Length: 185
Length: 185
DNA sequence: CCGCAAAAGGAACGGCGATTCTGTTAGTGT
DNA sequence: ACACTAACAGAATCGCCGTTCCTTTTGCGG
Image (tube, rainbow over all chains, first blue to last red):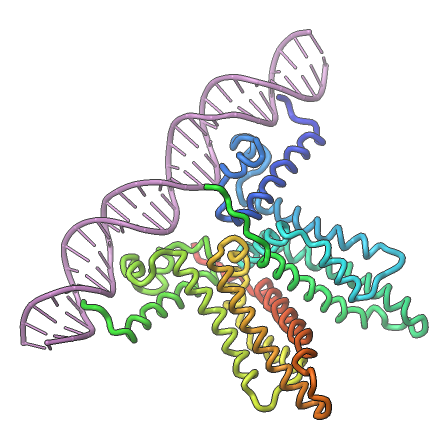
């Protein structure tokens, strides 16, 4: 084939990355072989290496995918014109957690402790999420205390920090509680 | 040699496990080879396999070691006769975090998402820690509100849960912030 | 439509790393 | 003090897995 059209190429990349995420959720980042991903994606090894330089590259793509999806959920609430309070916000975020993705997310944390590339991705995404939470809480503060709008942003910071922390802890609990679906030998 | 005395045997096991923890902190659970651990511990591969059935067994020992050490720190405060309040308690716990151990701890979380044995260890340790926090907060509540001791334990539960969550989040931040010391190639 | 280069398939390679095996050494119980 | 056996060192093994190579297929530009 000639060079695939950009849309098609992106589709293939996504197809592979999504298969990888499913595999990672089942067996973990390192226990997943390229063969596993070929089986899950329906594509061959050669094809995968056309779209990703190597396995590390693919792991990064998977990490970005999972983290981005979580950030996206948050983005919707941040953009809302009726900002929910911290408790409500946290409850909604927690309700939106998907166990499989939580597992991959936590695996990503572990990998980030030694792999600089993954670490940068994780830090970037968490910073971005915290910023969105910050906006969200600031909007809520401003709405609740119509008087004294001064310094709402500053007072929102520690609250956003705590919501983020509680959310991450819940992500961990979900990842640990979920069934760990066995792979048929 | 004949069978080592129990104390000596335990010493060897600890020597190996501690070397393993150092390696894991540098390179991660899966990127650490048995060869790395022989170099770090000063023992040979053959010797390691006398004391541990296989690598998974060693990883479990390392996980227990790291988690137990963190629980130990907490135990001291829980046993204190002047129980600190939640904020103070959290601050002290955070101050006691060691970056290298935080990294291994977070790696352990990642591994727990797919390895049932590790998962059991992590869940057991977190439950134990939460119980100690619960005791600690209950004692503090009872001291602060001399009147109305009724239901102090019930009211302490959600507080303990939050302290635990914030502590775990801080552990994650520490693991991600720490330098990721390179191994000389 | 057609041709061609890029993408897909899949077997082959190469290296790494967990585990095992063989001899050697040295603690321990008597 | 001695003998005996487990602990130890280190080399050899063996399977697995990431990556590449070569062939076949196929979709896009003209």
